Image (cartoon, rainbow, N blue to C red; front, side, top):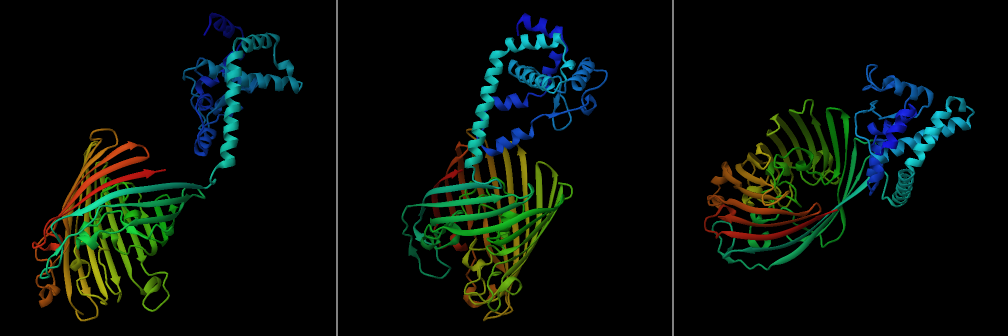
Length: 542
């Protein structure tokens, strides 16, 4: 600033009034930045200063401060001192010429108001002369500031006229995927003749549009539209172990596949009501943050998270999470897959259902562990599916078709961040299933599974992730069903799941993920050749 300015500032204490923008430069900063959406506009409005009537309203201004008397005089005499909404003045912030001009402009407006309301005697001739000279000194800055304010107002009007909704945000995701299955023979159950594996390279897509609405600021209504043509490749590979984590085919017809509403019952209790499309792995912590997402996580179905979170998938239900401290949380859920079906042995209570509970511990920010339990019931469906097509065919349907099945599922999951760039996660699970009717009524099955994942974050660039996942998909290891003659050879060997992928962040909205999935001894049958699934997934988010 010029020497002339510093001489002016000594003339009258009115000049000190303009320095309130040295502490309150949020408005000028917002004017300097381009407003691109309504959310930014709301944030800018929240940071606006509010007029005070007494210096005592400022929590950070004390009577011992060197400028206290000047501030007190200006508040009482001119009323052109403003503060932040949190009752602070922030008088030690740096001052720019634009900020000074903004404060000067506010004081000029206040002086004009005093003159117009016949209170001009409060303004001395000396103050008026000083203000006039300051107005001339800062005429360029004042003109620029007014121009920017006009531009912001015009932009604001345009955004308000064209915004999608005042309560709803539209969030989209589109996946383009190229994939193929390789191997000598198609996987078959033990004892069946081998078949050649004939697979073609595919190019397919999935598009999801999520409408997120909030009515109180602490609640969320989600409505999801989904269209896809990614055909699950178990048809050519002979095993669900080769399925991709984002597959699904509805002929690219747009359907509403998820509707739910979440809200805070109290500060410590969060409630989520699913009308359709309920998925436990979205409602509770699944302890695999780097790979859980279908669009930005693991490429395989098994590599995303423990199969225990697939219990009760797809229906309606209620999930409640109690988190009083942040270090310990308790979640409970009831999901009913056939809740919308009024026919016999269906509905909210009588049909397929899952009762779920999980206790999570987070003793440090780097370590998180969970203990999980789910009790499920599946009625006389044509083909029951204990893990929603994750693992061997025998593990998903050990008692045959048209058999009502109950299961108790136990799981332990953990995540350990060794550093900001290195994280490991894993899970183990045990399921005991019982047949309630049919030819195998009274039979039971013991099923085990486990996996571990390694994530190298920012590998090769900011936002990139190199991942490796290894484990054993669900396998029947015991129970009376293993003694049935026809099933003696089923799941007698062990399959292993090995997956390597590299999530490359092209931009904040584009991620490219190449990867290779290797299944050793598919269907837990060492007579089957190793199968490979090569995939290139590109995810666009908007």
